[in-house]
Amino acid sequence: MATYKKKGYKAKKRDVIEEQSKTAEVFNTLDEGASKTEEWVIKNQKYIFIVIGVVAVVVLGYLGYNKFIQEPKEGQAMNDMFQAQQYFDQAVNAVEKDSLFNLALNGGEGKFGMLDIISNHGSTKAGNLANYYAGMAYLNLKDYQNAIAYLNDFSSGDDALGPIAQGAIGDAFVQLNQPSDALDYYEKAAEMKTNDFTTPMYLYKAGIVALDLNENAKALKYFKRIKDDFPQSTEAANIDVFIGKAEAASN
Image (tube, rainbow, N blue to C red; front, top):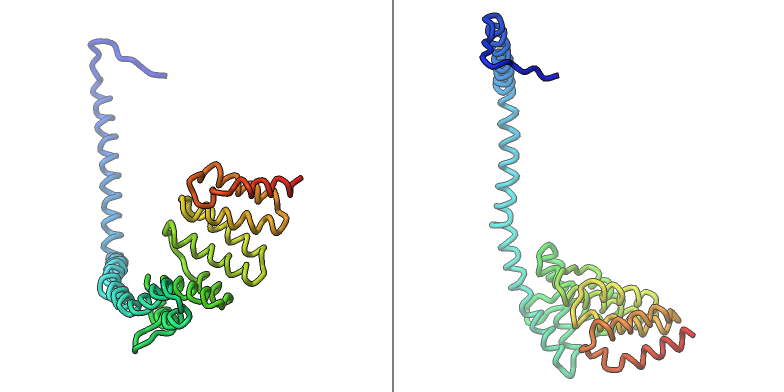
């Protein structure tokens, strides 16, 4: 219960002495604590300096590794991949594609191919990207198993490349007559990133495969999403036809 002092109240001398004594005890306790801390620091300073040194070495080592080792590696890898990337780009637009895709994979004119980049620069961003190029090259060469293997080793947070890689795996499974696996990857591709290009494209492919698998409700859902969410997309042009097919198959 709180105690209130009357106006004009003066503390007794004994009370003042007690208060001073308590204050002194507090300061003595603090002094003792500080002294013990100092003693501990002095006693263990060797270990403290070791810990500080280890932390500093780790931080500086990480910064140094990125600056003096990883960055030069990235630059060298990109330089080494330049010619293979040129071959790949030429193959995409060429009539006779196979020879150029093979050059993109295996190299030519003394330059690295994508497989060399993966082997020699696997820990770099270029090495990761080479998995994508290699997988797409194998897909075009109809080597579907290798296409799946390399595309699965590629990872990307890019709005387009990530979904396209997953969708291309779906394409490979279609060619291998494994529609259930293809559907899984088309669904992953459609949901990975939402945009007006890859999302309707892989919703459409997922819907077509779902119809083939008699998963009609799923197909209808994908076709309706294209109609509702992506009405300006290429896939939306004839989407009512596929909605009608899915509805008829569901009845």
